[in-house]
Length: 285
Ligand SMILES: Nc1nc(=O)c2c([nH]1)NC[C@@H]1CN(c3ccc(C(=O)N[C@@H](CCC(=O)O)C(=O)O)cc3)CN21
Ligand SMILES: CC(C)C(=O)C(=O)O
Ligand SMILES: [Mg+2]
Image (cartoon, rainbow, N blue to C red; front, side):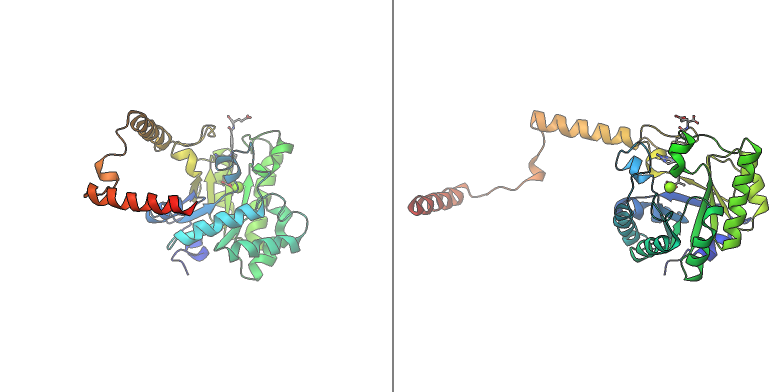
């Protein structure tokens, strides 16, 4: 059992902001956990930042399971949350349950689904069988095709109503938190005040109970970052410099240096051994 549980996260509402970051592999998850993140999250955004897809729609359950397993092995303290990918829970509740179980068996402590109102039944069933669920409303990237791209949500009454209805449905169905993605800050504030479960924002302003961002975006290793991202480091630039140095030293012969390889001290010993080996090899043919 890890230190941070869904109960811990729920109790943070109104007291302490929740810090959440994505991670998709073992070394990244080790660093995220040691940095004191509350939630380490295997997002389906891995389709874009790890696999180079233009959106998240092609991500499979198999991919989510493999990356969840790698992250779960590294995390000792934080809550490990895994995204349910597009197509893994829409067809029927039973299939959603089967797929959520796969993520839990890969080491996740909880799963996240996009939407709320439309998935009340699934959320209720998962929670009753002991699988904690986080919801996700506002911009839901799995609706990429219908939305015609990624855009700010919550300007119209219809969108405000949909977002609030999702959040309330999630609260009622037993979800332990909800992600609010790329909504006007006023809408995120309204939702945060209207529901008792924590809201975790991404591009939704400061009036929420926590924040989530994508690993590659804040570290400067992804080119097409959303406009709400703050870049905390230029790791991409550091990697580029390191690789240019390595390449240069290979080309000019300064790598490997003495400390990077081993040779016979007694060259006469090596000559004798070589002679014997060459003799034996010539007898073979
Ligand atoms: N790397 C990454 N970071 C994310 O935060 C993220 C993903 N991927 N993939 C899934 C969703 C998609 N998100 C996004 C992606 C792009 C914009 C964005 O660039 N919006 C532009 C207009 C884009 C357009 O219409 O072409 C804007 O200026 O509003 C917003 C949210 C957030 N999520
Ligand atoms: C953007 C966050 C909330 C997400 O769902 C993901 O990274 O997949
Ligand atoms: Mg996602």
